[in-house]
Each structure stands twice: as structure tokens, then as C-alpha cells.
Image (tube, rainbow, N blue to C red; front, top):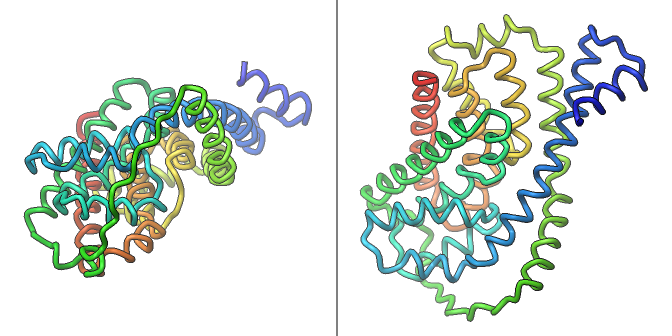
Length: 315
């Protein structure tokens, strides 16, 4: 139905020739814009309802008092169902530290939350199937656990800003919510979030449409195809400076894969954009010293590159 509407607008209403690159790019843009925005509306609302059962205070209590090994696993899994945005990174980091949660466990949560993004998960499932989506979850959680363990073993607590350990946030009582309140707040959250991210979604789809319609196959295969052994690091290096959410990068990934980009390379690009964005690093600088941020970026870069090569090898 959506494809029929996109073709009707492109070929009949606008009268574009189906064989032209402009027509194909526009058809792709119209089709993916409607599809992605519809999916996002449903996804964000459902996640907002789930999120209402996991406020930050509950997350802190769930992670405190566990062994470090189980703590890393619990933190990584909890990050999937508690999709806090980057603006929540600082108060969450302080809250976890005040609750006595080890630094490495805290990082497992902070890595998993943006990396295993619920929007990307559902979109990947719809676009590429359950096998790819499940592999995305498995690798994202593994990266979060491994990176958290490494940071914990390095004992880098001294590279956290001193004031973090001096803050006592105190306990905040959890609010009792009825289903009506959850619905109203989830609906409002959905509207507010869509207002903030729709430009990124359109930009992402626009880039994907341009690649789909105009980017030559030979160019992509040459610089990011399976014959280039450095394709994954190049994709990660390009993704790190960019700022977008998973919803904005998935259409780009889809278009790149259609042009011959291997799944692992495309997934490494998406992980770099969502988990290593410069705005996130700027926010974390308020609580982390530059040395710890550098270690965090280095570990994440290495693990994301490994994931990219792994996917390219097994798919």
C-alpha cells in the first residue's frame, strides 16, 4: 500500500520517468518516510509505556548490591529496556556512583542504552528480518559487557571528576502511576520525542534516498565493499563525528546495503553514530576526565570494529 502510494505520487502525480535516478530517489524517500514515521510512532509509545516501569531510581536499585559479573550482565540488559537519552547521562552517572555501583557496571549500562537502541531493533527486524535483529542485540549487549568489564578492571575511578563522589542525591520516592497516567504520559512523550527527532529522520532518509538513487555501485564497492580490508574502520571513523539517532541512521544503512555495503560494515557505522557521538562525549565530559573519555572511546571503537568484521565474516 505504501509503495503504491509512493509510486503514484512519483510517477503519476509528478510525472517523473521511472527509469531516472531522481524518480527512484524520490520514490524511496516518500515510501521510507511514511513507513519509518508510522513505525516510530508505535515503537516510541510502546517503549514509553515499558519505560514507565523502570524509572532511574529503580534502575539504580536493581544494579546495586550485585556481584560485578552479574552486575555487568544486568546493566547491559537493563540498558535495552531503559532507553535514556544522552541528556540523562550525567544525572544517571552520578546516581549510579552514589548508589555504590562499580564504575565498570555503570559503563555497561551507559553503553548498552544507546547502542542496543529499541528503535533500531524494530526497524532492523522489519527491514532485514529477525536473524539480523537478534544478532544486533547479542553483539550490542556483548560489547557493553566486555567494555564495562575492561573499564572496571583498569580501575579508573580516579579519572572521574572529584565532585561526582561528593554528591549525595538522596532517595526519591517512586510515583504510583495508573494505566491512564501511563497512557497519557507515554502519548505526550511520543509526541515530544517525534517533534525532536523528525528532522533527523528526514535527513537520514534523504541521505539514504540520495545514495539509493545516485550513488554508483562501483564507488561503494571500491571503498566500503567486501574487497576492502579497511572498510569497517573507515565506516567507524566516518560515523564517530556524526550526530544522529538510530531512526535516522537505519534508512542510510538500508540504502548502503542495497548498493553493496556488507552488513557488518553498515552495522559498525550505525553503532559508531549512535554510541560514540560527539554530543554524548561533550555531555559526559561534565563527569569524566579527558583520560577516561579517551579510554571509553578507544574501547568502544575497537569493539565496534570487531563487531563489524564479525558480521561480515558470518553473514
